Image 1 (cartoon, rainbow, N blue to C red):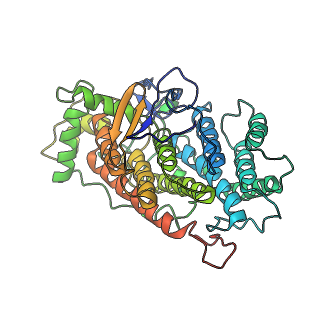
Image 2 (cartoon, helix red, strand yellow):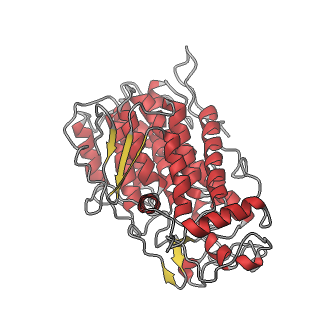
Image 3 (cartoon, rainbow, N blue to C red):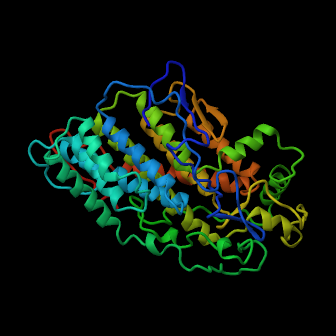
Length: 468
C-alpha cells in the first residue's frame, strides 16, 4: 500500500471485498467460541481488506520506500495466511521481518544500533537492496501467505528501485535476516500451543478460567506463549501486573455490573455507535495499527535508517507485549465475563447477581481474561508512536474497517477507545483493559530505552546484541 500525506487528516480506508490487506478478528473462529459452536463474527476468516481508494495514487519516489513497500508485503502476507495466525503470532512474525530490515539497513549506514551484529557491510552495498533482500529472506522462512510469488515480487522490487541483482547489499540483507531467524529458531513459539487441553490450577472453582465448552476449538489458545523468549524484555514476567481484583471487592463488582449491562448481546443501554466500536476493534492490533504507523511515518521526513528503526521498534514492543500479556494471563487464569456472570451467584460478592443465560455481544475468546491482549498490544504500539513522534500526529487519524469509520486526534485516544470496545463486546472487564494498556506502555518504554539506540558520534557501527 502506498501512503500519501493529506493536508488536513490521515485517512486509512478499509472494507470487505478488496484484496490488499486482511484483517484478523481478535475473537475470530480460531480464537473464540460460543457455547457449543464455533464463533463466526463478520471478520472471522480474516479476509477483510483495505480498499485504499485514496491511498494508491502515484507518488514520487522517497528514500524510505523500500522499507514501506516491504512492510506492506509483510503485513499483507501475515494477515492473509491460512490458517490464520493468532494476533500474538502476527506480532512475532512482523517483528522478525522488521528487525531483519533494520539490521540490514543500519548495518550498512551505522546510524542506529543493530539488534544483532550483522558484521561489516561489503563495499558498495546498497541499504535499499539490503532492506529488500532482508524482508524477502525473512518472509520466505516464516508462516505467511506465500502467494503471489515472493521471488517475483523480490525481482520486481529490485527493478523498481533501479537495483542490480548483483548488488552486494543483497547478500548482506539475506545474512541479516538469517541471523534474526536463527536467533528466534528456538524461542519456544513452536510449542506454545501445548498442552492442547490445558487445565488451569483450580479449574472448576469460582474465578478460575475454563473453556466455554469441551470442543477442541474452544480449548486454550497458545497457553505456552508467555514462555516465548522476548526480543528485548529480560523475561515475560518482567512487567507482570498485580492480580486481578478480588471477587469480593468493590472494584470487581463495579466491573462486573458494568459489563453485565453494556456488554450483553441484548444490552438495552449500548448505543449503535458503541456497538460499531466493539465490532471495529475485533480486528487484530496489527491490522489496525500497522496502517496507522505507515500513515504517521509518511508525514515525517525520515531517512531510510530512521524508517527501518521506527518499524522495528514498533513490532519489538508489540511482540514483547504479547509475551508479557500471555505470561500474566496464564499466571492468573481469571475467568471471562461470560462464565463469571453465569456463575455470579457463586462469586462471594453480595453486589453481583448471576444470570445463567447471559451472553456477550461478541464470542468469548479462548484464553484467560486478565489482562487484555488487545489493549496490551495497542498500548505498546501507541506508546512507541508517542515516543517516536509525540502523542498527536498533528492531524486526525481516520480509519475505516468493515465499513466502520473511527477517528482519533491522538494515539492515546485510540487506546482509550479499544479499552471501551472490549467492555462493549462483553469479553473483558474494564480493569483488565486498563491494566493491559498500562503493561503495553511499560514494555514500549523499556524496548525504546534498551534497543536500537542511535550510534555514538564517531562510531561507524554499533549493535545492541547484549540488549537482554
